[in-house]
Image (cartoon, rainbow, N blue to C red; front, side):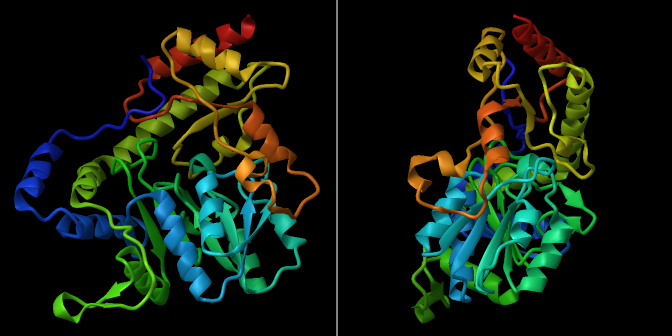
Length: 366
């Protein structure tokens, strides 16, 4: 079976996990602190606050921005729905724009046409590890007085001309779900250079509590969003190997591109040819006359997992009432309807890639 995702967790983590379980200190301890430090080193020293998932990272980040005066959020229509849910949960008015066909992130051209107040949060996504148009977003957000929220959930290890993804926005989030380049089984992080936001996020993840021991005070309505020591230890075990994992993903994706680039019924989004991609996922587009479900089923018959790449927010029942700031969300809809996510992970071999490519081409030939 060629899995869609299959994280490589070094076996030496077992001793660390046993030590944690024996210690009785299962949350908010040395492993969490060490993992925050290690990720911060990779992100140019930014503040890194670990939380229980990428969704809770979005929730506390939006909460902190709302407390700073944010009232509106502009989201790309193609992103994981929990981002939209989190913005709505903290009371922001959510607007949708289409995605750029190259970066698959927020369309800067559509953002430039908007007339929204300076209390707006503009959300971008480093889709599948492809760096978004971060230099243009940085400039536009500064010009309009907007906060910039970067969904870098897929982008640990990605970089652009401005530096590592997640390091130039007002606030960014990471996810450590098992399909990501580094996993803690479940987990996430808020990343920021703003010390006030970092302080507020640390309070929010721990019930809004400040102080220690008998001096504890609940100064904000908060959440139980902490990451456990067990989860942090799983992430720490991978940190020394992360660059190797990223290189293996890059090799596999280069092989995919070479094998599939000239197949008439397969389109590879141009963003996968851009430098700086961590290749968290590898996604191709099938033409409308080809059944994606049939292709997924044909791959499954060959022992290969494949799936849809994600969701167009405006097509989901929970979000049909959101304001659309563009007449068309066609690029988002096309990716949701015709995109196909193929296996990519650090255990994947080049021979596995060839097997996937052969099976996909055979399914389309029929």
